[in-house]
Image (cartoon, rainbow, N blue to C red; front, side, top):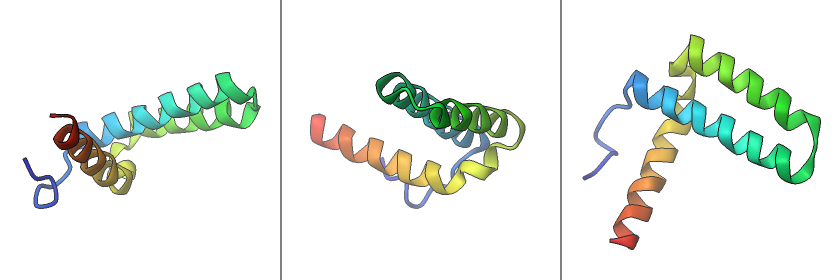
Length: 73
């Protein structure tokens, strides 16, 4: 399943934004830097209000997940 010819949907953009929120929260738990919790809040608000903002990250995120899925299977 190739994602380079497909457009990223709004739902996939929202999923990508929420993945960034999770990454920031994990980084906050590891390094205890308040900047990560602030970034998580900003990303969460952006993902809920304007998901197309994450379209560039979504393309990279879904290409990476496709590559990992190909290697694992």
